[in-house]
Amino acid sequence: MSRLPLNEDGLATLVDAFYTRVRADPKLGPIFEDAVTNWPEHLQTLTAFWSSVMLGTGRYKGQPVPVHMQHRDRITPELFDRWLALWGETTSTHMPADVAAVLQDKAANIARSLQLALSFYAKRAMLQRNTAP
Image 1: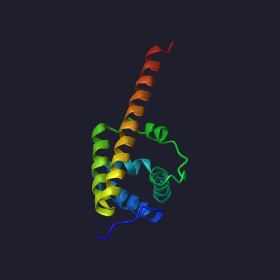
Image 2: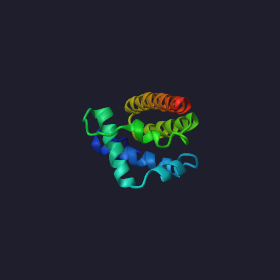
Image 3: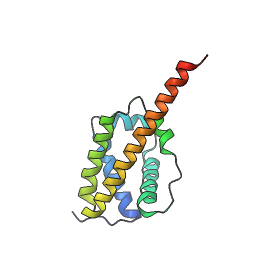
Image 4: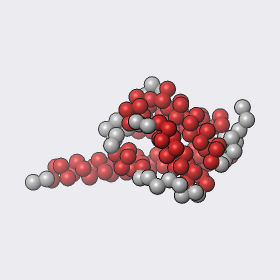
């Protein structure tokens, strides 16, 4: 298979290939199918996200933490690990090795940040419930 270029088209193809795998995954698929109501729009949003991260385009204007907070009861560290494993496999298959390594590193950092945020907000919500009059 020829490797994708690191540009908008390459990222769009990568995101599409990755989420095809996510949707077919027995653990991740059901969560994403419940959460995503418009897949074409979601894939465009995620392509914009990775375009902003990797190409510095600034196309992504969303807030990933609040979106993920809606599903925090279903998102476990093991699912983050599974997501990262699929991302690693997909980027390694579709991108040049040096680009795949950067994409994998960025994804790992983002996953850590999201996990910390989910944990922080969950603990804060629990404290607020326990101290409410």
